[in-house]
Amino acid sequence: MVTSVLPRVESLASSGIQSIPKEYIRPQEELTSIGNVFEEEKKEEGPQVPTIDLTEIESEDKEVRERCQQELKKAAMEWGVMHLVNHGISEELMDRVRKVGQKFFELPVEEKEKYANDQSSGNVQGYGSKLANNASGQLEWEDYFFHLIFPEDKRDLSIWPKIPSEYTEVTSEYARQLRGLASKILSALSICLGLEEGRLEKEVGGVEELLLQLKINYYPKCPQPELALGVEAHTDISALTFILHNMVPGLQLFYQAKWVTAKCVPNSIIMHIGDTIEILSNGKFKSILHRGLVNKEKVRISWAVFCEPPKDKIILKPLPETVSETEPPLFPPRTFAQHIEHKLFRKTQDNLSN
Ligand code: OGA
Ligand code: NI
Image 1 (cartoon, rainbow, N blue to C red):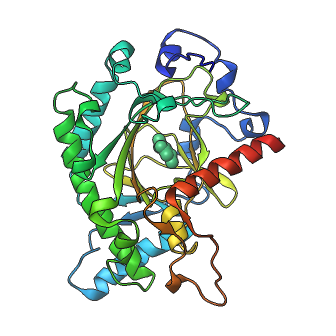
Image 2 (tube, helix red, strand yellow):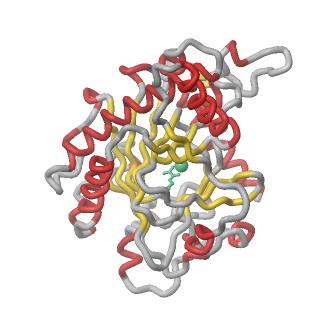
Image 3 (spheres, rainbow, N blue to C red):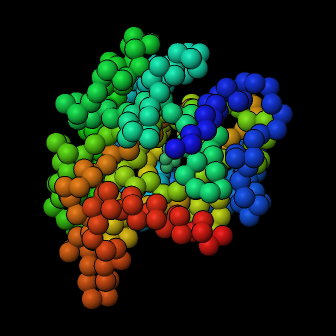
């Protein structure tokens, strides 16, 4: 097999090139929608990503609690993405998560390479960059670090960053707290669908089987940001995704046929409804198309935690309670692994017809 060794995007970015290699240039049709992210973030007109205050999500007062659930429901149905505030995870812990991740990425590339993943042999955990998976050879302007962070007995601590030394402790604590937050959200979403409180949690694998995977996305400065994307347009396959970032804008959502740039909301966690919940809810909750822009001036880092069902153990399909004569099932039964396969296949077909 021929494997071309492509440099890390960070190395490319720091080499002083003024124009980016062609593999990073988006197709012509896509270029027209890529603007300057700082200008885009300032725009106040048009729809904006909703902000959901979770203070009352577990209130003893039924009326107060239901008001909060309704806000969450509306955002999950209309957008499938939102800024969560007062989510219960301390500012201090979020700052520490950002600090240890940033410190790891500040190591020289050669140091980080010691943690390199090997996608060809199925080792997806570790330091990596996207490999071209189709004829166009299209690449993304980012490097990343990917690893499983929960449940604790499924972690492989040997591949976690050893520098900085607090990385494991801080990231583990964040994982535990996010797992708690995921449960609260799944309960509220269950109630919003008229299900028993614990239903969605159970349907995605429960405490034992729901996997939390952390992807630290590192987007270097880009000399031609209007030609590239940090992450190409996609929907997340997860049940839920939680994202922290370093307050540099980049995330865009495809809402009502336009790209909307997410504002940077202090102390918030961005939450996506992923394909898994979209399927279980028979499309009532949306998995929104999104992408990441890059820029010339500032490195952007984001910490995305994907909460995923087990690959083969569960068959995902619209729950019977979400289906009726007027609301037929919108998705065929598939395991998570089959869902991923199906998406890849569709993408390959798209590319063939272009
Ligand atoms: C992702 C993603 C967006 C971001 O990693 O799936 O959509 O803000 N990231 O980095
Ligand atoms: Ni995503």
